[in-house]
Image (cartoon, rainbow, N blue to C red; front, top):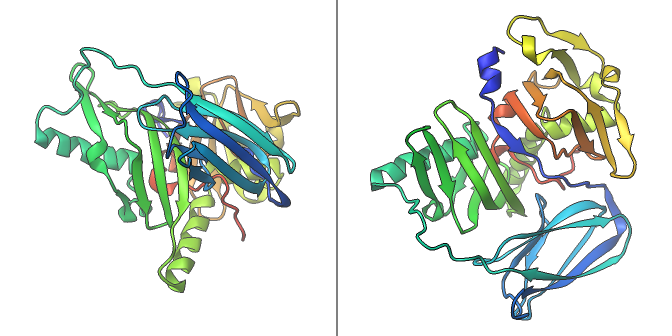
Length: 345
């Protein structure tokens, strides 16, 4: 990996969620979504545990109920058109009832709003093509992944920097027929520039699609396993479970000398993994970049932290901001699994 390639790797935020194996007694989240100013109920607001398949919408009274037997720490996302999104942390480690009142603030109307549509229809076609490639990806799975409502996405091109920005007030719907999921994505921001730097931040709800037959079901299960193997979640989970030595080869080097020095192999023990009981996080401090090679499929990835440490929860989900390259850089929405996906060999 050369230095220029490393520096132009994209930034992506992995939202935090601790997901355990199912327990016999579920926890329940009940609540009501209302307007902040009037207290009136908000109908049909989306309420979901971020990056999971656990979600619902509010009824005519603004009320909702979620139930799950998978204990953990979640971000509860509440979203409705015309209102600012709310994110509420929920820690659920036993069978208990959470009762919440979520107050949504109406979005302010900005006068003299800058028009963000492309100048010409041809520009929009060009921009949506680039958006599909960079947001959905260019992997095999992306060939069977479709933007259901691309018309809700607008663009602005900064001609000075060559940066393309994507905007929408609507939920982006994605059908992933390679993995069997429908994704509902709330896009916070998206930018891509001529130096190949990609940044995007989003909130996502997964829905299981119903397979047409047993053959499609088997295919989806196989594709999901292939997505998991060699993924960041697989790597961090194996690191925590102390199985990384049998599943990955780990190398490191100084990022300042990345172009002129050789990678040297290290043991996972060299990372000095620590456990923060108060925050229920594993972490190791580092100023290095790492090369991660998966035994199972020879997928090679590179990772560098943008902070002083890399942290992950008990189940391999990290909320760090990374610089990525190699296989992990290729992963986009077409290759995402919900956090509540459970791998079974």
